[in-house]
Amino acid sequence: MGHYRDQHEDVAIVNQLTSKIMHLGWVEMLERVIPESTHPDLVKTYKRFYYAGAQHLLHSLVYDAALDEGDELSSADTSKVDALMHELNEYFTEVAAGRQ
Image 1 (tube, rainbow, N blue to C red):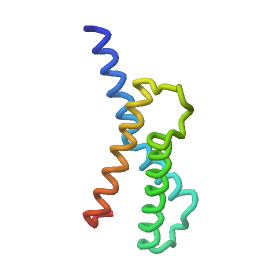
Image 2 (cartoon, rainbow, N blue to C red; image 1 turned 120 degrees about the vertical axis):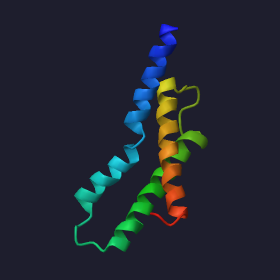
Image 3 (cartoon, helix red, strand yellow; image 1 turned 180 degrees about the vertical axis):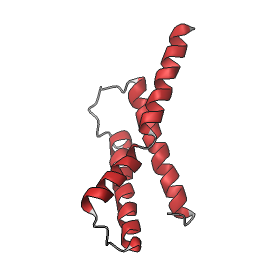
Image 4 (spheres, one colour; image 1 turned 45 degrees about the horizontal axis):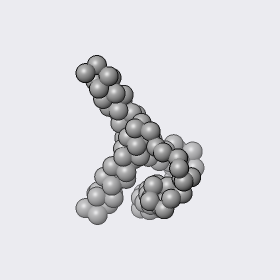
């Protein structure tokens, strides 16, 4: 029972750390690369490009066998990928609803 609880707690911590990893990357890029004077519509477009690129990269790694054959993901790796996929899906749901 203790091992399951420890493993479950580790997964929860990983999910907390990775659930906003794309957002944090976007914020960093926004602060470093995009001038403050950039029109908000253009910033919105850049953000969509950023997330689209991230989605493509993640999809390529997970579904297009970009990982070496025979390499297996650990449960922590799987949790990170799941959290990233959730974050990307959440973002594109917001885009489809017109909120991003």
